[in-house]
Image 1 (cartoon, helix red, strand yellow):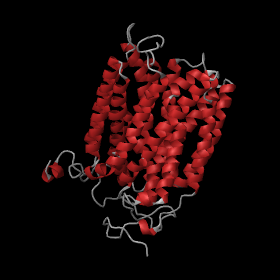
Image 2 (image 1 turned 120 degrees about the vertical axis):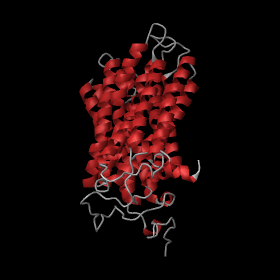
Image 3 (image 1 turned 90 degrees about the vertical axis):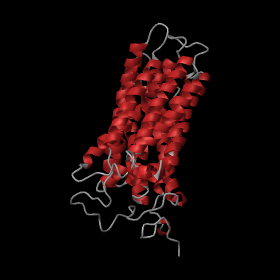
Image 4 (image 1 turned 135 degrees about the vertical axis):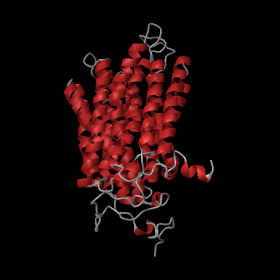
Length: 463
């Protein structure tokens, strides 16, 4: 593609720059079209138990896939989410959100189709490649594509903007969980579970909706500001008015402290989300059926989505650092409460604890782009955010591994399945204490890391 084509093509930033009269409130629906689709990742746990019975249909056979093996599908997808976001962050910033949304739709949709082929062939590695690698790349590109765009459209409310940008990711499972269960029921027969056919339908439908988002997204004109908005003359202590170059941010302790803040917050929640359906059924046998568990996953998705918008909006008033203090302190109490709810056979307390936990888990994702904007400025926030999502990749391994393997260890040593998750909950609570300490040490970025006033990529050198 030559320079002329790149500057005038359908994907170019110039082509999608908004004209006079364009409403910025058209951009959040574009973000939701993408994030509601890729948010299906949080509902993938509804496939885990059916995929352990692909051969046995009603019960698992020795040749069926084990739950611990299937847990890696979600982990691989999250790893590639973080890697693609980190590697392609500048590419997304330079090429604009439409190109990124289009490629994300192609990868995410084709990931389902390849996974369907893996299910038909009973080849788990093909599922790893499809949903894990291709789908994970689609997740990463789709996740970061609208974030910096919405921050630019909403400089007056960056927390709310990032909440809108990724609230759909948290809410995707609210649609995908019951839809997937219903589709599997429609396609299942006495000889197969309907998983492969469900993957095909979801891949096609999600691709189409993501293309709608790519078609309607727009960038603001250079220098655009909302009518009546005046940037504050005196910014707050942890909010900078200057920019830090994308790779210079990696040299700051603030980036790595925020990296650990996100990683620990996500680790404590992602393992639960990845096994929410199976965990709820095993902790409350006879009380929570497969259909009820799918409803629980959907309810968690609703709070995940609502928490993203709610907590990110709250952070505009109390600050990002204080918001994370709430996440870690309250989360510690709630995780420590979960084993008690299981021992007391209290489904209500179990559900209440986890929906609040998941609201803060989602709120952490939605608040962190604004946290980065406060620390490093707006110019490279999308690319810096992409690199920070490697924390999500690491958590995508740590969380499910902690939940799955500690559970398996307990079961192998005679612990009843209803109590096999107790030790994991205490480990998660301890991780939140470490996250609280990391957040405590975050201060303003040193002046030597800021870019020179002319806006070039050169850095201000220390005196």
